[in-house]
Image (tube, rainbow, N blue to C red; front, side, top):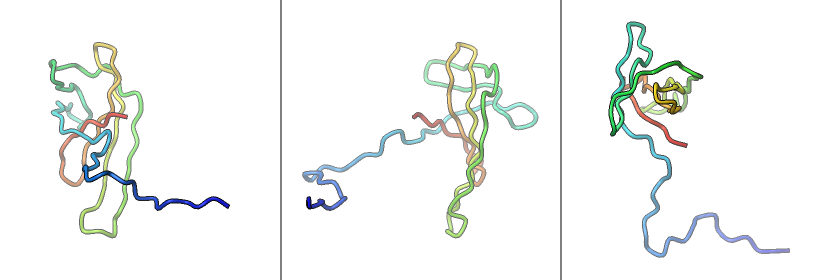
Length: 97
């Protein structure tokens, strides 16, 4: 039988940083609240289409609940970007995977 080490990673005193942390983003929306344009560091890009959308509602029992409407959008330059609207705060975020 092989011994299993504790699941907490040893960091040698260094702090761990999460990968793919969502970043605030500015989204221009159309009349029904869907993304019409995404503002990235290198400019403003129109949304050609919404490829996919899904909603996550989680941790409803906590004081700070999670309620997000995700959209995978195709931009005018051909890039596909995942964004979500935090339905609690109304802010938009970009999620990189």
